[in-house]
Image (cartoon, rainbow, N blue to C red; front, side, top):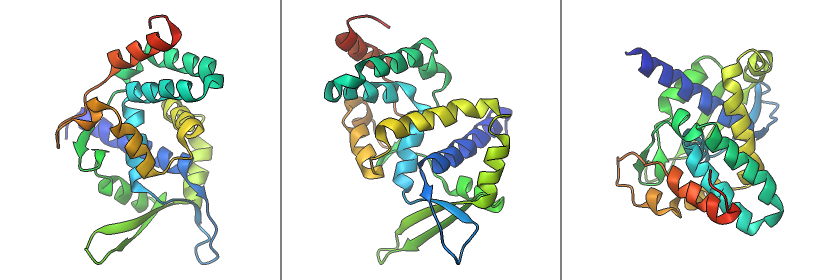
Length: 217
């Protein structure tokens, strides 16, 4: 395996772990005392991962919120300007393919690894049609301990951690299916062919910014 592939594999593991951490709810079960947090949606993981890997799409969705929430106009302006001034759409972009339900990358290997080191535990049920449903991702006590011990020393994680919290601030109340629907509203996303990579929308997002704020990025 080439060096770049190894780096991408570990980045994918870290992103998924942080998504589960930030978006999971506290969990308690006397029968499983080591399980501390729970996230019940693979779709939500995939859609948040898409925004982490495509900051231009996230920026565009923030701009859409301005029309519905004028009181957030200034704070969203600062966030979107920072995304583009920091060249996030180029530096942070990691392509995702389009599948039946939108942007997707298989999580089996990631979850298997996180489970093997006792950071995440996974449960699911197989329905009558043989499809795996009701997927549950549990964060363990060890996961919380390791994260709290290392988050400050692993500076490269901070961007992902901060961005997850930013997504949660504005879209944390959305279900995975609702996030999927939001992303499908964009023609560039919706019309991407099956198994093709979803193209970036930086110029489109910049045009939207100019329409709202009457200045160029």
